[in-house]
Length: 119
Image (spheres, rainbow, N blue to C red):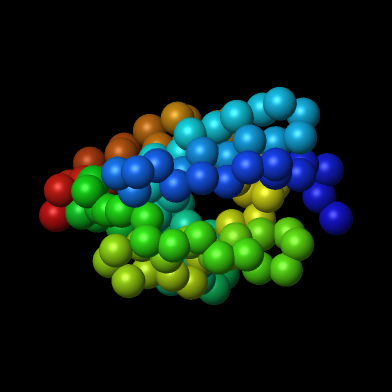
């Protein structure tokens, strides 16, 4: 069981962010684009070391759904039809705490590979 327990999970009206509030008062507003490109799914993370995929063109992606997965996670569905990522409470917390650095690394990977957030 995780030590982080969400008390609120809410999709913004424009479907561009997910707000997660934890029982210790921590509150994180996570952009849909970040959630999509850092998805914990095998499609993004790969099935082993060195298989991570840099996903371009997701600047305007939106969240379609958030579905509970047991009592430890949610599955997030995006408007590009990606919905295989299982986001644990711990991983959502990690994205809230370190997301800016993780997203900066993602942007650097895009640049290195000649890819864009727009296509």
